[in-house]
Length: 278
Length: 300
Image (tube, rainbow over all chains, first blue to last red; front, side, top):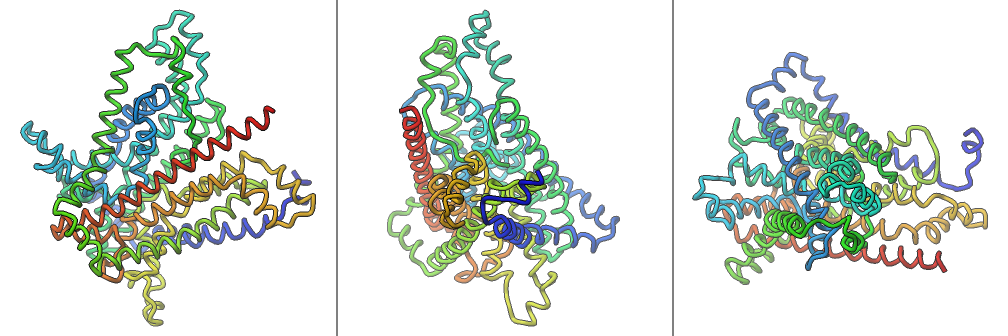
């Protein structure tokens, strides 16, 4: 170690690392630390009062609850879609594969108004759901639809490469030993996919919790009913309640940091289980 | 949080699995999986995309074009391009520097640094906007100094650029770091030993190896920069003709019940998204091609 530290063949270590650290601090670390410093302007009792107010707690339940449901829906259907894309040939496959990334590329505001148009009472999908008594737009169900939309590629794109790397020998061995197709899937394929599937779930969940643009158009934004946590921060800001907005932001940030650690752990597990680098 | 958008080479594997009985499902199961997953695809991905264009043209071409050439829409398009033109190159330079330092050298805390670089992806866009309000807003740390010197950052263009820089921060770096780590440093070391200077080594040895990953990162970074809504919405102040980006313009029109105009502006962003996906697919195909070529060279 000592030798490599004193003698480096390649140039540019100091300047690139120096620039990286300076730029990272300037754009990300210093601004983010402002959030935590700002909260110190509140006493702990005041802080607790803000972050546990009934209207705010209702937003956590809605945001976290619906994000979990959306991530679960995406895990099931994302896995099926990834499976179809890797294992089957069908017309239009290249198009489907390319469009899976649409939620990454389409601005969230555009997704928001498009989904609202589809699920409104007279929309293409809403008109069939309305007679059944199912209302999606301007209800919590609408938020779920938006969160499913934005989370889908995370699951497909984390599972797909692992599926592509699977050797056919594994399944052939399982079949020759007498396993049914379902048993092979359940006991041979799923354990290999599991870390990646959980990573995709966590990524979709993390994205859904913080999502704002695609949700606010379809949510209805009624306090205690269909108000998400990011909107609560905006509402506080519009009332010039900076300390209140910041207090709620710290709750979300702590959740995000926890998720980030979990996701890093899951990715390490994925590489260990499958022998892939990141 | 690497893994989600990370560059992946598009090679079709279906024949490998379809050619063997052990890796096939019964036709019923196969058609069930295909049917359910493609229905899900159509309902959740394809229909929203089509809806944007149908709604945009609902009142005809004339309304559509009028909505796009009115001064507020044009200034929103200009500001959107400006924010991307500033933030994409800055984050590109950062991404290359970070990947060079991380992939070509050993140092302590490397893994922690990678996690910190990914941080903006796990922060809600609303919080990304909030942090700059706390720093530069009227009540912020530098608020009184800025107002004394008559500098506006929040509710002005610099704030929008800063928020865009924050949310697009990791895109290029997270594509390049795993790519350059996988390539090792032997080629660069050989170049340096043969007398190449640092920048020559990067330009003639490293860059050809990473160009597809680099392009991939840049187009995703650009798409996010032009489409960002939440973070920009917090710092913009929504001043028409001055601090409105195209996504914010869509919101304003929509909230004023000018649906055709809102969807017309949205369709421009949707076209941008489609162009992004086309370039992305093209880059993946080219990378797959050069991957195949290099394998063939190795074999011969």
